[in-house]
Length: 472
Image 1 (cartoon, rainbow, N blue to C red):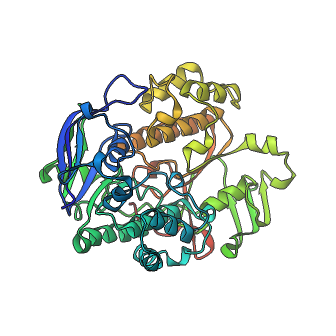
Image 2 (spheres, rainbow, N blue to C red):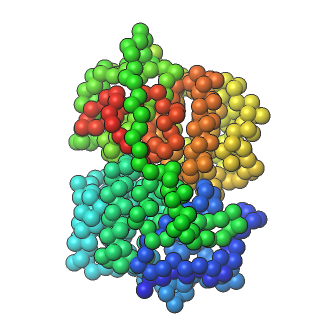
Image 3 (cartoon, helix red, strand yellow):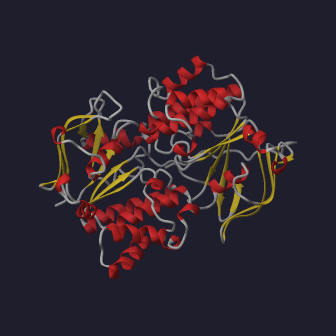
């Protein structure tokens, strides 16, 4: 049947005093699609990890059952055939070098017959629509492509229960809609039980069977369908504004002359002439794998490119690296890749120490922490924060540094709507008062449009101003 039942479940993080769940009893019905909702930090990822058996649960803290069997009594070799989980950050899940090797590794760990492994592998890649990535190095894939690979691994494993943690956070809107339809196929035609945690509710209202909300009282609440409309309203697709094309200025911030980009043998950007402008916020959109992150890496000299990139009229290759790094800062997609210390307080202190200006006073930092719902976490170990909390902290640290130019790669990934509004508000105020320039890559466009002045779209190996897209 593949029903998941929680019986009197309580759980407290080892570093916390307040339980994240307290005496929770509920069921996730078999062969149905359940959307798990709740603000950042309420325990969605933790709940999925408990159901997957990745976190230990003492018997006195309740039970999790797969049908009638206690999940903890199911041998690990059998558990993966019953329950499989896709993490928020696919990099934490990968163990091999190429896409093909990763799927083979997962299927061998399930002790599958070698004769069926390649069939399951190619079928899963075809199902997700990424057969073209089979031989690619995982390290060369975009964030969205990695999420698709992680989903293909889950499909190949053919587990009865599929747990998905923010599976589309880095996926472009068109691909996201296609993958959602694929999940419905898994439910309808293969009888899978799907439990999916997400903050972006676009497209779920016509597809899911249940919506479960984690409440402030540390309980799980099954929302009646009469409450769904309000939940999904803010995420209905809508046309974005038509932003103006920037006028010619005497000296642009960045001047790209015949700049081309590639990844191995794959051309990402054909030779392009383009200007990026100071004191304006520019949004860059495009499908997964088109080269948006690679462009950012080129702008900060982390990736080779053809042609010439000038910053304030000077070739960026002629700057001293340390000086240029103080001018142009890059926010990575993976927040953890940008942390150097153990606690929140230590990261804040380091950013203050090396800040370009003293705009962020201690009082202003505390106000920002409160605005982002991070207040009171100074002593907390960073790696115990939720992914959304890590993302908000990462952005605040970059703002504190006060580099004149901010390149932000998917800064809204994994954030709930309230956090998006708070973050956009903080960015608007800070950029207006400090005259910084923001260039942002984002697939999540809900709530972002008030911040944007110009729009660049990367498609068909060309980077151009304008171009239609839709909010996801």
